[in-house]
Image (cartoon, rainbow, N blue to C red; front, side, top):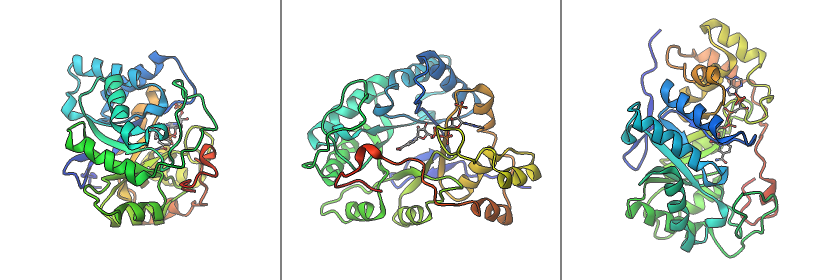
Length: 311
Ligand SMILES: NC(=O)c1ccc[n+]([C@@H]2O[C@H](COP(=O)([O-])OP(=O)(O)OC[C@H]3O[C@@H](n4cnc5c(N)ncnc54)[C@H](OP(=O)(O)O)[C@@H]3O)[C@@H](O)[C@H]2O)c1
């Protein structure tokens, strides 16, 4: 069987994004060294796409791992593709540059490869430890004005590409139709896994020139979403000598988008990158697709009632 060749996606900004990324969200609040070690392992095994965010409250640890791996010459900065995200409390246009500068300082970088508006929902300020669950919604700021400030970050060379996350179709459409739009989003990061295929949003985003990135491709933080031990995926995997998790990730990249996966365990980090020596047949792609139940896992309760709550 032929090896799957394209390992990057071309962005409309002219840059390329590796198809398989390492996520850094970590609700468990493990000690810093655990995340630093996991990230260093990820870079050692081949991950070059790293997904961070101000909200995850760990960008200094992500930055520490990057620094150590550049210093020991495993990678150069240019070989890495680093994403961060603008949290809701920084969406007032005059705060957007301040936010990216905080992330850059914490990550120890001079530029980001991709900067995303994390959610379309502006809020008032939140505590530094991000310990809020019911933020005050900011009803004055519009994400269209946030976007104009995002465009300026590209012009200033602080970020190479800009994009969005967790927008719904009509919100993407409204952004694309904004008067005076200078830079189209390069990427839309959204929840996608075999139990939540998100087909309409993928199609809409891609047909409008955006690359797509899947978060929670294995069903997310709970670890018991029913994907990594799904009998259908296990049966498909058996044919290729692969696990259900590898099948779920491979299904994603063969559908034409990037996948972000995260683990703090060395064996799983290696395992989740071993996706290049097999290709699912059309029939097996359909078998994986058949377990869809439109089961969305990430429900933004903190944005419930917000005028821009996407779903
Ligand atoms: N834009 C957004 O709003 C948004 C939302 C959510 C996530 N994200 C990003 O997307 C990244 C990926 O999402 P996620 O962390 O939910 O990813 P995920 O890979 O779907 O789920 C991670 C969970 O699966 C477990 N796991 C990982 N590999 C496994 C394997 N081979 N077999 C069995 N279990 C496995 C992990 O546990 P162990 O650590 O114990 O292995 C962890 O509990 C995040 O880290 C974050 O960077 C973005």
